[in-house]
Image (cartoon, rainbow, N blue to C red; front, top):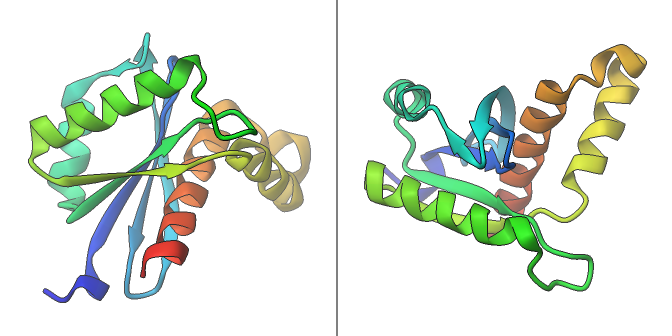
Length: 141
């Protein structure tokens, strides 16, 4: 398979919720899937396994939450640990991507589509994952 026709999964890491999106390099676009509940950043690994079985990603992108000046914040370590666990469990290449402002952008995008009723937490997290994936593809393909 050529590198421009790969399926990707994107994750917006959070300690209580992890947004998920799927993307295709051939189109450079992504679609929000769901948000996984997490406890201290740890998801239900069976649900993650089901996502990997369904989408069979060639590459995974995990958003890296950074401060506006580019330095790490408390949750940055958790996102890196999550990325490492995905790599170890599923033997797939995992990249990280600066996710500064993606949650704000996701809220703005959802608000444009339907006002306040569209702004539930799960939708915001999955759209943020979508934006992370699209940002990574824009910079890397």
